[in-house]
Image (tube, rainbow, N blue to C red):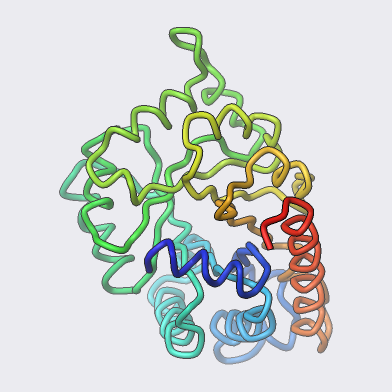
Length: 275
């Protein structure tokens, strides 16, 4: 998918919501968990319930891998369903891959070609030759971990060299890679105050922003520090949407949570005169 198509969807839906499919069978409603195809059934129900308000879906690969071949089959069928019924929605493989070049190429082929994702999250620690294989795929996007929302982010990501934190070096260096125009970056909502400095480095790149809601990040602060004329944000919500209800109304409850976030996003876009 080209960025202009993503931007079109954002403006059309007045939303930059990404719904994370972190499908934990210990948390889904019991009548789903005890069914014959719980991963797919729950994922499909959430996709259908939130598609009107979301511009991206982000399956967390670990929650499918843990169930072995059956889990990966459910992931493939979920992706096929999204591609067939909601082809305009951007898809993200939350896989956090990254390895030596030939291995990264295989990861890229697996998620871009076999599963058909539009993008994948990638760890930058091994550097250029572990990232560029992902960037070699046209109309596919690599979402590089820059400044994450977890507590352990401070272990390394703020370490300074030449007066700059490590996540600044990651961003600046990655912009020199071949295919860097297809880079996006993960920047956690819990680090929203750092967004202003990050935007000086990458004023136009799209950012995938986890951490709003259950992790305590503020949507208004993310928008204040990170929004661009083309929005430039995909704000993720997982648990707050997926597990809004444990009852028969779980899909309706998920839709209500997604709609509430979309309404807040629309209001913020209007405040910044972007609609």
